[in-house]
Image (cartoon, rainbow, N blue to C red; front, side):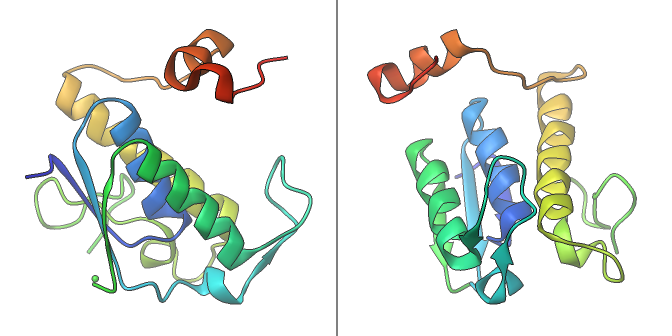
Length: 146
């Protein structure tokens, strides 16, 4: 059974899954696939000029799949740390920021929740910061580090 269960497969959920799986925690994502990203077109993501929301999700899904995340498509009280009233259960994205949210905030919330989980699991404040050597180690010749 997975150590981390992520509910929701939008940018926040997939970001959380990417961080936790990349850092060695078995992760599963349960997703109804009803995210607003399917209605979006992104012009505001750093590093992305213009992309359809559904295409962006497909890229995110490929990334989490590459790290062995178990994804379940078609399946779905939060404080400032994104932890719910259920111990060790976190919520991110539109579930947390009902009045004010957008895709970049959502991905950042997912990453922040993942760092909270990793800090709890590792027993210390956890930092996830990759350098070119990490990419080469993880992906070999698939990554251009120039």
